[in-house]
Image (tube, rainbow, N blue to C red; front, side, top):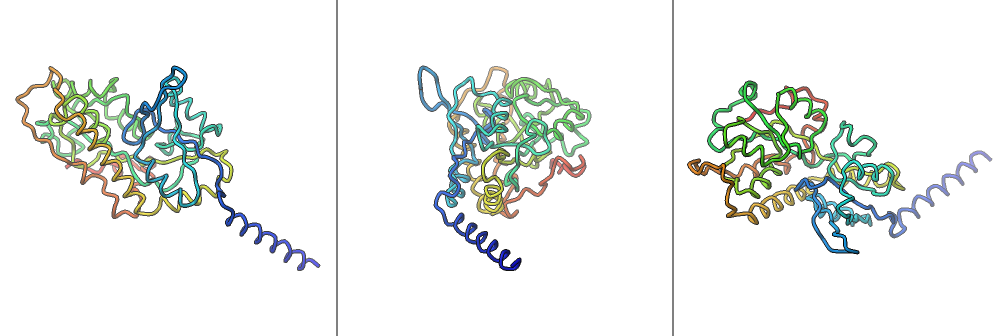
Length: 325
């Protein structure tokens, strides 16, 4: 009798499992998606349309197209959200993800208090590389990390960092200022010796001010922060979603697609602002030595879709610093 009962139970379980997998639109919950506020190319919100006298913004991200493409094969519906200006508060957005109002958040850091309570989807297929940036004629004076110890560093408050990197940057005595523009002004006028910043973000922001050719970027990142897509823990069928996401994100072609989107967005932004007149503080005697380090940095194509330092926040400072030249 016991054997018969177990057999019947197994039969029903197998039948139920098979039927669930075969049902169309198995993942029938639209995954409303938000991300970092105004932090290109990982995420930003751009004006989309007017509605009821309010301007609505839609999220753009280098992750969006690759993620939509791979997840659509499984019937997963990724829906970038349109938001109004008053909705663009990062902490409130994260509360809405935790509550399940939004299901996906693009651009979270692991082991970082701001993102506690979100379910990180491993692996992180791309990282935010933080480089040393100087005026175009000053980088040759910096050969290694020790050279930074007695120099004046700055960083923009607009750049989001993991808790680990915040501590390490603070230990370096780096001054945080309000905008990238102030950082560029300080290093070009000699009021600071270097700045720290994401190479993608600053290539784009420098182009806005016509400063691309007046800055120099270290060939290697000082830090690399893995960037995760996170999902609300109250999402229905969470374990099934996680299984599909993790399988797709581990594929090298997904990481390659994200990287190609990053390069496309950065290059398009630089071209859009080509010819912008630099601010008056620029000394035009500075030699134009702009080089495209973006193509060689953080090459993911041979890493199986994974960032080498997957748990960078748990490493010691010596393990994280990769050298500058």
